[in-house]
Image (cartoon, rainbow, N blue to C red):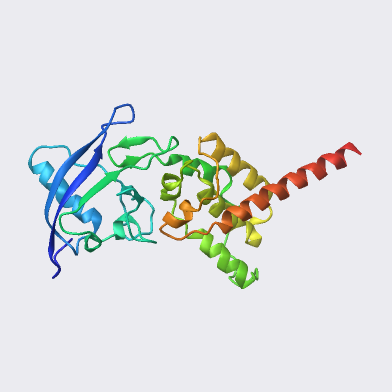
Length: 264
């Protein structure tokens, strides 16, 4: 919790409060006095909730887990920006020193049809889980782990796969996109496995199934504005979307060739 040598801030909060998916919500204003600039944003919310509980009021609901910018659980819009004003930073790693004394801070949940609001700042992101289940895995024999050097991988491929794998599935890309597209998330998962030898066996059916599931969940189309990558706390590159499109094209060509061969 807070307790450093920094100064205190007096803030105003406008928080989206919504009891459930079928309820209408509204912004509610709260005073946030004497907030240490050394506090994280979620610690500040913890302090506000402590005050609300003491007054027998309903605390503000928000997702969180590791609070280390790793798990992807936290995330909501802060003053119109996914995860707040700092680049490559999750809400849980955002500190109050990045705000000014007397500032009004607006907080609302991710806005997307595929991310229905559960309560207040919490949304249901299980659509991402279903996209992963559709093909974000490889089929290998079980048993002892293979030796690390058994399958040589070129360093450029390994680096690109690692960069794609840093996606934490927080949903900021969807929330910041004007079309609520999940292309950046899906492409990161597709690229990660398509770049590695272990993932090439199922690469065509993987991209087909994951993209089909993405569309079935109701996410919008990509128009390549780049807001998804700009708001991503892990800096996932738009190059992954280009790679996923190439994978889709390769899959379509393979199917066409297979169909032509069957017709001979």
